[in-house]
Amino acid sequence: MEFYVSFIPQDLKHNFSSVCIFIDVLRASSSIVSLFDKGCKEVLLTDSEEKLVEIKNRNNSKVLICSENLLGERLDIADFSPSLIEINVLGDLTDTTVVMKTTNGTAGIHKLIEQGFEHIFIGSMMNSKQVATEAVSLAAELGFGINVVCAGRNNGKTYTIDDIYCAAKIVQYAKDATRNNNIEAKTTDSVIIAEKLLASYLDIATAFEASASGNTMRKINCHQDIALCARDNITKTVPKVAGINDEGLIVIKVFS
Image 1 (cartoon, rainbow, N blue to C red):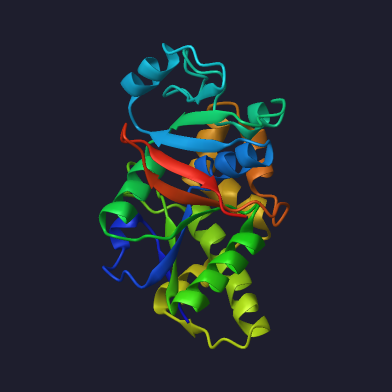
Image 2: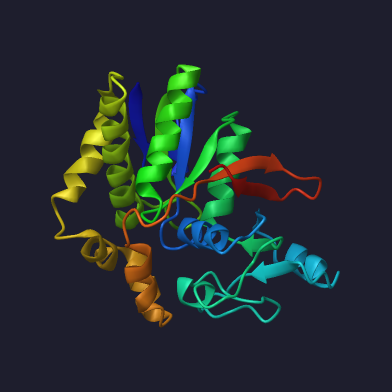
């Protein structure tokens, strides 16, 4: 089983024989995992504020809006922002759909879908071990490799320390899973480069603090989100992309 890390979505190779794990660790993918931990039925992703307004105007009590403005504050029409600080104080979200506006995350997943990748898990530090385990299990069943894809910044055009560090940690868990199941693991140069980053920082939070994404969290007064997103292997929730609905929204549901 061959492992790859795509540092930004543009690094993707046209190799459809891969199970993908998509990461936008500060904060979209971490927020998505947290929402499902709260019992959320599904998460719908969009990059359109107009679509949010349209959905909000339907006044469906079982549909919540998650979005922020350029300053990182909750958007006026949103029920909450993608801050884990806010999500953690939400009540039970059973049977609730959350429509989330993201930039890097939505664009990155769209690119994966457009290129024909059918199996896209959502990864974070919080579900790092479980998402790696599920990806290895599915890849072994299909005879595929695993590609850990980082969302990056600036519409997926810029590398980020936080995503690459998270990718390296997930690959380590995936290697453990292959060893436990007597599966031969093949490491590519992209994985070796990512793993070098692990030795450069004392711990996960330190790496995230050093990233441009971490700097953004400080600027918008969401410093606590860095620590919350840096928690390793605290949930077994694994979201997976289920496709695109009739409104053009990316549908994410719980795989396990």
